[in-house]
Every structure is written in structure tokens, then in C-alpha cells.
Image (cartoon, rainbow, N blue to C red; front, side, top):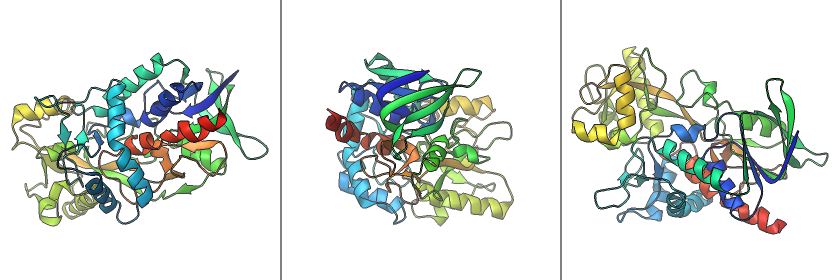
Length: 400
């Protein structure tokens, strides 16, 4: 079987779906193929939100500096500027596409604060922001003429012609693994990361690095693959899976403590529990080595119980499933693999060094994150959505 379109998008997270919608709105034909259900991606499991300079006390310049500081001196300044400047427009686009972000009593966007951010700038939908954004984008994609969603067949290889140009991809269809040819003038990898390489990860089971492997086999350059961000606070219950405990809980007032109740991170790090993720994760690992324990605790019991439950219903429900009332009991947590800061190297238009092949979102590397990603930069968000604008421009309008 063969499917032909202007654009082939491999992956149905925020980066892929956002681009698909933009392209189809400009009369391109788009095929989105995903090895699971539409919208099943790392995006769906993101909790905290999407960061942008939206507050009256914030600015693009301040946000840029926070990003550069978090990246430990290894961010590409040009990539950072493009993404941060584009952030408010991306949030506006998500609102236009139907995303329901949390709001204040006055009707303004509710902005949280997370690790490494010097301002409250994280737009969110309670503590299941990724699920809400995924819902809105899937609905918009399904209602947009020109988009064909192909669920379940895993893509196994990129289709490279004799001149080294990507012409689409090959997938396997049905229980018999029948080959499915996906032909396109341009192919966008939006396959997410590779958290499943690690024993402990916040990523879903589909995050197996498929796009990275296919791009490498096709001759694309991979960069900064050594920089894998570990989220400091994943649920570490002996009977539970590695469930993400969003950094926004620390922005709400939760602090990290050891078995003795000592707020060890507050004593060790400037910024305390809201220092950047790499520093907080290293401080936790050092404490675990010292104590011989498997976890530390995230303690939010000093905060108003009703407000905590209302702001974090997803975490509250999940903790209760394991017998933990987070308004009374500290939550056992430990670091877990969370986000790949490296990936398939691209320029600021998403273009790889394989003609016809582009990448966006977590699978892509632009230098935006440096050695450590600032909290709530997913799509995963700014990297995937801001850089998706090529996109429609440099390829589609040239084609026209």
C-alpha cells in the first residue's frame, strides 16, 4: 500500500500536530503517522505547563537569561532568542486551537513558577497540561481538512533515494507486517525522545528513540546525545510506576527533605528546591548515596490542603492510589530520566543535513537547551512549536 502527500509527519505529539495544522491551513496535504493512538506521546504526560514571557513583571530578555543560565553555558544563543521571542505567540496559537489553560478569578492566565525560572511564567491546565494540549491539538487536526491521521503502523525506516534525499518513510501495517510506503516531498520527524533506555523514566512506553535511530541510519548528524535531563521528582513508591511529580508543586511551596526531615536542598543550593533540575537532581543523588536510601521526600504539607488538591488534582489522585495523602504525608521521590536535550541536529528552520528531512520537538537538536533544559520547555513546547514555523514557509511557499 502507498500513501502520498506533501508532508509526512512521523509522530503525533505537540510538535508534529502543531505543524500539521499549520501546513494544512495553507492548503498542503499532510499525513501524520504514529505507532500508537493519535496524541499518545511524551506531550500527553507533561504536567507543569508551557513557559513564556507573559507576566507584567517579565520580559523576553529575562526569560532568555534564565534559559542561558539553565543550559550551563552550552545553549545556542540564536536558538534561544528565536524560541523565547516566539513563546507568547505559541501560547496564543494554542488558545486559538482550543486549549483550556487555567485562569485566575479575574480571568487572566494563571502563571506558575518552576525550577530555574525567576518569574511566574508557566501557563498550565491544572497539573495535566500536556493532556489538555494534546486533546486540543488532536481535535484540531481531526477537524482540519487536508490532514490524514494514520495510527498504529510503526515507521521502521526513512526512504532515501539514490541521491541521498529523503522521500518519505516505510512503515509496517497489520499483524502480518505488510510494508506501507509513505511518500512525501518533505518529511518531519517528531518522534520524541528515548527515555525507555533507562530503568527509571517519566516517559511513556513509546519513547524508544525510533526517530533518532532512523535519522542516524539515513546519515543525519546526532548532537549532544550525552545530555539527558533527569527530573528530580518522580514518584518512588515500591508498588508504583515512575509517575512524574511536577516541578510546579515545588513552585507551590513544596520542599525536598531527607529521612530526618532536613531541608537539605534548601541548605545546599541557591534557589533551594526551585534551583535548576540538574542541580536539584544531583543534590538528591548525593543525599541518597549518603543515606543509603532509595528516595527522599517532597513535602507540601505546610501549604493549604484545599488549594493544593484543587491545583494538583492529578497528583492528588495518583498519590491516593498508593495510600499517600500529600496534604498530610510527604511524597517519596527520586530522579528519573525525563528529557533528551540532544537529538537530530537541525538549523533554526528544522532542516537536518539529509535533504528533505526535518525534525522538531524532543527528537531535534538546535542547541536551544544546552546541557540542561529549563522547566516547562517541552513540545515538546517551544522547541517544537516555535521551530515548526519553517516550515510552512521555507518549504511550502517555495514549492508553490
